[in-house]
Length: 96
Image 1 (cartoon, helix red, strand yellow):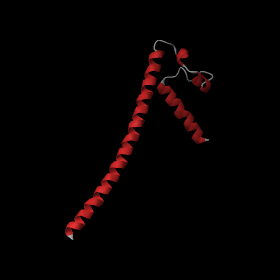
Image 2 (spheres, one colour):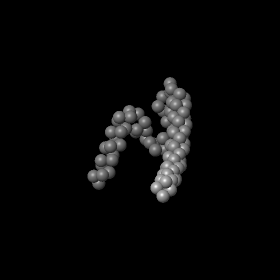
Image 3 (cartoon, helix red, strand yellow):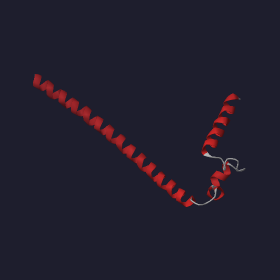
Image 4 (spheres, helix red, strand yellow):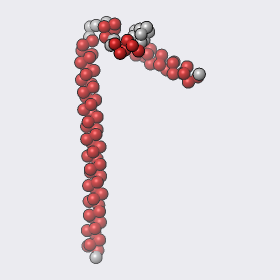
């Protein structure tokens, strides 16, 4: 009887472990796909950076970026200034 109960417990443990393995494998596959997508995006951005080397800001700005910043107010800002401006605008939106 004890041997049979032990075998049943082992079978249940095996089923639980196999289910967990399937779950972890699916999670790994999802993460690998995400990593591949990010690596592809890095390659695209690196290529864009190589293309833009040596050119002025006016030459680098895309049509989509021009549509967002028609007046060119933000094109000349540094990253820190742009972040500061975003926070400033965000604060004014929250206050009103």
